[in-house]
Amino acid sequence: MQHRIKLLTIQEAADILRVNRTTISRMISTGELPCVRVRSRKLIREQDLLTFIDSQIGIETGESSQEY
Image (spheres, rainbow, N blue to C red):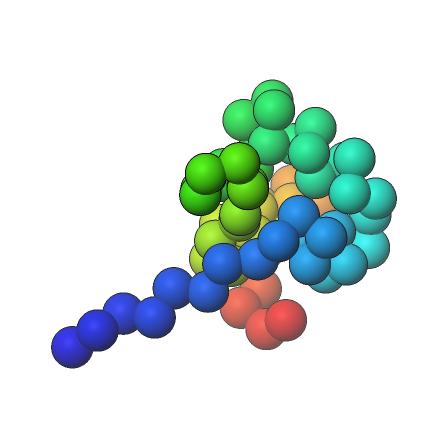
């Protein structure tokens, strides 16, 4: 069974979080958001972005959400 991994560009991640590309780049630089490097490109695993969102929901409400 193959696992399908969805990779997002910095712009796609920024669009999902409704922030600027610079914010995503800063999050990657500080280690707040992991990335995969493919040559000179930085890509974010969709699952890592969802995990980040869940962690932020937990901080705000003490809960976790699986629906996006």
